[in-house]
Every structure is written in structure tokens, then in C-alpha cells.
Image 1: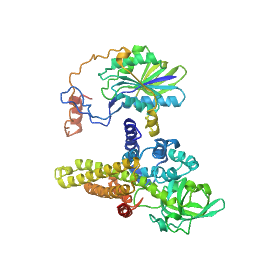
Image 2: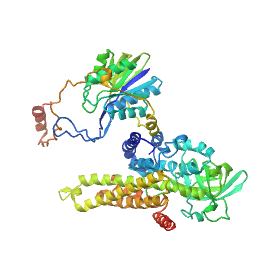
Image 3: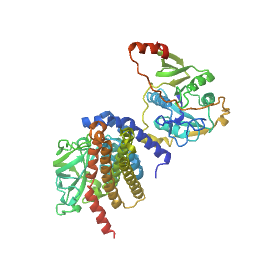
Image 4: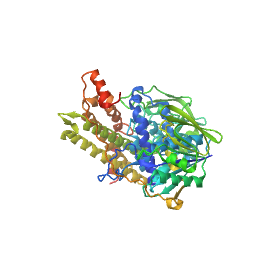
Length: 382
Length: 249
């Protein structure tokens, strides 16, 4: 681990306190108004949370994967909308740039991403292509002094607020598969780039997604990530490992949060003259949830450490994402059950977590995609 | 202008305090410890004065075991420039603390000393006043607002009747009340930078201070539980009870 124990503890305590005192009291408001207050956004930036994974040389904290997931274990103990705000800058929106960008590209964007001045988005998914790169339709054909982009991206997190998009587009139409795909760094405000209306979602209010539309959007040749064509899909896949571990850590955090809420409720709430926490059927739910959350926490930490040692964790990261996201689904379902009627009423916030958690099984690769990745890698590595 | 801010490591305010079975004190083993909240307000005020350009250097000092160094690191992460740990595993009472601080003041020669009005562990509320007496400096206690002038400081204090403003000539002692400011969260980059700031270590022995206790704890007990109330039948009965039994009217 890069940081000494005392500094790491200081970091985690500061985040935990910020979550407890500043973010948790705003959960209902953010959900109701579908908006994170500008003042809180500034505080999140001042805390340094936009730059967790960005190297220190570019103004970030340069946390290792283990350190990052431990921060996510704390930051995830509140509405995921807050985490989502910083999620793209730390994950899919910056990692491609960090891993494959040219020095000039890094200098231009990373310091502003680390400070939160600039929000980044990762524009891969399309109406007819998600994890399936072969069907990617957005095109980038060579034009005068650069490329001309055309196509539509869908469900792009933070797009309405983004200043920078990492866009995946096909530069070589003769290559129908992954090899024809390149990544571009496109700034908001580039003529021909526009965002659709903000998507109305089942949960995670306060976090915004929308379509991103390219109509003869002209970008200079130095917008090509890393200055090389055909590398885009490889970049996207590398980026996803880190993102999947981060999301898994957020799933663990949300599970631990609702277990804590459920436990407190079960100890307080009385039926038949005793706290419901004394009933064995309720105890079974608490114990199952605690066990599963703990298992996921261990998986995430172990895989993060393994990644820090330089191992290829593509399979393990997919295992973490699959288990942790399915786990939090079961845990938050039990949390509603333990809360009974109160769990179904909006005031307690449990039904909100129930809706928020549903997304974890879908984005950054559905559970089914994770299963395929895991099994294919198993067969390949035999 | 140089400023000395004093910080104490205490049981975190969120922790439920438990008395040791033998009644000799409260349980401290494996308990979460943090900076005394009033001292946090003192550090925040110090950092604000520095941001206003009124203060050039902030020195954070703490007296206690090795782990009190962590409390100093918190102050450094909030914006203090360097730290001094006066390391001792002994119990230090307010007078001993004041004597140690007087010695540190003698060495560091600050123009202003800020500290919490009291620590939330023993609530003594004595150290600032004793330090002022030992140094012969003016004191502004229970600060609600401070305004630093040229060679002077105006301290608005929370007193029973309302607010009172006193003008002090520097150097002076200020102790902070709850409403002086709202302390900032140490940002993650600053927590990492704090590790690189200097933290010197000394001890009461090196400073030539005798810290042997002058007080004896006779016993420590849990607060008694809340007793059941009574229902009154009429307003007249209520007034009667308030007058006779409660003695508040």
C-alpha cells in the first residue's frame, strides 16, 4: 500500500465524517429535487474526491486500487447519486486517458478532472450496442485536419454536466469488430455535439444520464486518444476492470448501510411485546445479509490487492461485480422486509435504496455479461 | 504574527462512554479517539486568520501519549504549519498542562494562543485561564467572534447576559466557544500533505515540568437513569408541585 496506515485512516475517517454529517442529511432532498446542491458539489470537489484515482503528478491523490475501494466502502454508505457525481472522473471517464493518453492529453485534462472543474463522461453504449463492440455504429471518418463523428450514444452517466467525453467510434468501417474502434477525447461545446433530455429513471435521482448525439461533429486529430487508431476497444476493456471493482465496493457499502439501518430498526421495533430483532426469522435475514456483505467485501479487497500487485484481474473483477451487485439486491430486499410496512414508505428511505440498487446489476456490464466474461476466460485459460 | 493552537486527544463525541468496573475512570481501551471539538474550532479559527493574512505561522501543540501525534496531524491537515508533541503517558491535570504550555510559549514566542474553552472528557474549563495567569497575559474566554487588529484583538464572548466584547493587547490567550465557527473537513489532499509537515517531539521532563497529580479521583459513576414522571390532575396541582416539590416557582 502506497499510503502509511495513519494517513489512510485519516483519509477514511474524513470521508466517513463527511458522508455522515453532510451527505446523509441531504438524501431525501436530492431524491426529491433530482439535483445535488451546487454548494455540496463544491464541498465534494474541495474534499479532493474527484481525483482519487488520478496520479499525484496531475493533481489527484493517486490512490492504489485497494485504497480506492476502501474510500468507496465509506463513500457508498449514502445515496449512490453522490458517488456517481465523482464516479466518472475517477473511473471510466479518466482511466482511458491515464492508461493510454498522450502526455499532452494528460496535461490538458487530468488536473481539471482531479479538481472537479471538469466532469468527464464515458460514451461507449449505443442504442443498439452496449457491451457488444462489434455492433458499434458511431463513426469517425477522417476529415480535414481531424475526424468527423456521427452517431448516438445512450444512457451516458453525467453527460448533461460533462465538459469532456471519451467517445468510442469506428474509424475503420472495413473492420467490423473491435479492431476498427478508436477512442476520442471530445470537449463539450464542440459544434455538432449535443445531449438529449435527461433520462427519467427508476432510482438514483440526482445522478443524471442522457443521450449524446454527434452530427458531423468535427474534432482535431489530437483528439484521438493516445494518437493511435484501432486501440479504442482495448482501452475500454482495461478501463472496465477498475470501474467494476469500484462499483463492487459501492455495492458492499450500500449493503452495509442498509444492514445497519435494518439492525437499528429491528432492535427498536416491537411486536408481540419484544423487539423484532429477537425473532429468529428476522435474525436469519440479518445474518444472511451480514454474511453475504462480508463475503463481497473480502472479494473486493482481495481482487484490489491483486490488481495492485500487477496481476490480470479481469476474471476476478467480473466475479466481484457479479456477486456484489446481486448480493446488494438480495440485501436491500431483505432490508425492506425487515422494515415491513415502513420499508415500503418513502420516509424511511429504504424503498429508495431498493430502487437505487437495481442499477448495479445492469450498468458497467450486466450480470449476464459478467457471467459470460468469467466463463469465457475460464475456458480460455484452461 | 505567529499563533499557537492547543489540541487535545479525547474520546470521540459519538462514542458511548462506559465507566470502568472498578470505578477508577472511564474505559479508554479500543475506544475511538478524536480531536476535542472545541479545539477543532480553535484550529479552524487559526486557519481562517491565516487565510485572511493576519497570521503567518500556525503551530499546533498537544500533550499526551504517542497517539496524540495523530491529533496534531489532523490539525496539520486542516491547515496548521507544524506541530509539537509533548509526549507523556501520565495523566496531566489542567495546571500541569498550563505549565507545559507556558514553557512552550516561552520557547515559541507566539503572539496569540487559541484553544478550546474546555475538553469534552473532563470538562475542566481551566487550562486557558491558568495559562493566562502563569504568563501574565490578557485572556478572552468563550470566544463567539474574534477580530485581530494591529497589536490587539477584540474578542466577543458568550456570557450569561448575552454578548460582551473585550479588547486585549497582544500577546493574549483566547478560548473558543461552540458558535465561533464551523470547522472544515480536512480534505484528502491536505491529509496526505500533512504527513510531510514537521512534527517535533519533546516531553515534560525535557521542559522541566513536574506533572505529578494534585487531584485524586475518588470514584466515577454512570449517570443515574431517568426516573418516571407523574401525571397531574389539574393546573392547580401542577403549580402546587412546581412550587413545593420542584421549588422552581
